[in-house]
Image (tube, rainbow, N blue to C red):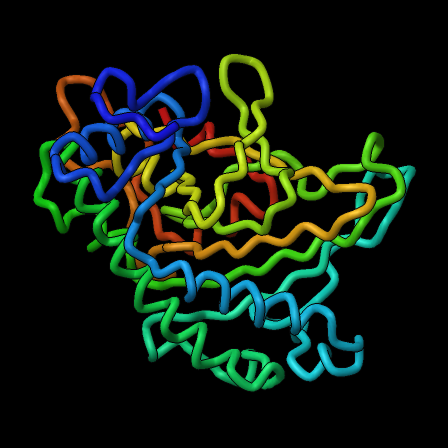
Length: 305
């Protein structure tokens, strides 16, 4: 049920927020509160047309159903984040399931390389370009609400975090051992904000209050994860949600994640307006340096308070 009153918008389950509520102040406060308490929420009636979401999911599914030879037409080179690749192959000993992924930049045009965009299905590019336009509008609105929730100019977070948009499509084929295997390990996203669509197969879990909580599937809802860079610019006011995925024994699970992230040379740290007498919780650093440390599991304790 989508809550209508402010005191009902957040409950013991992952928050569900109706963006079409005419009281936009109520919506903004719900987004801020969910970001403070959970670091994740679901948006319904968010303005992205249902038909467009259906088309996006259709062209993504059709791509992954192609032969391996056809998919490798957009294979990921060793020196690139973009392209198609098998991230994991089923390994019972390591408790890893098969996960195929497709990555490509979608905005701004200066970073888009269409050689990594599938040409089959033929309407893949058209659909993804329209989805990019729509998801960018929604993400900027979310960042405006979060900025105002910090008492800042509404453009503040977007100016730091919203430099580039990357699409990540995940494909989890049926797994014969779902009780032993996970999809993606527990992690927080390195980006600033993640906007996620899934098919009807559940499998996303978030960690709160010392327990894993299954994210309820709501058709055409957008799941929003607050990620590491918004945690840092907010000086810890907003949570970066720890999450993982599971697999299904008989059905294929898919997800479409748009990662909103700073440019590599953007310096990211707490906004000065949020720093009082105590030192900031996080040190400012280049986004590319943050990625370097995180992907190599290097400690931040020597940098952050």
